[in-house]
Amino acid sequence: MPNPKRKHSKTRSRKRRTHYKASEPATMNCPNCGETKLRHRVCPNCGFYDGRSIVIPRK
Ligand SMILES: [Zn+2]
Image (cartoon, rainbow, N blue to C red; front, side, top):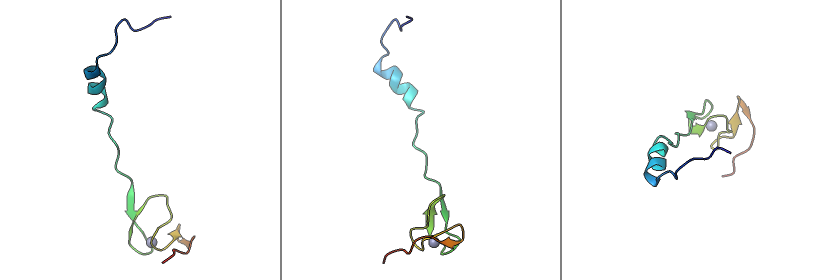
């Protein structure tokens, strides 16, 4: 079986991983109440999704 000849240095692994970044969560303004919400999620403020009321938000 082919195997790496030498162990990677910590520096080498870390240099590669400098390109791994956490991406910003996709947010939008709710078309119903205008509050900032996550895309593809029910609005936590008014409980609307796709123009319909899905859940009644508890106060
Ligand atoms: Zn809303």
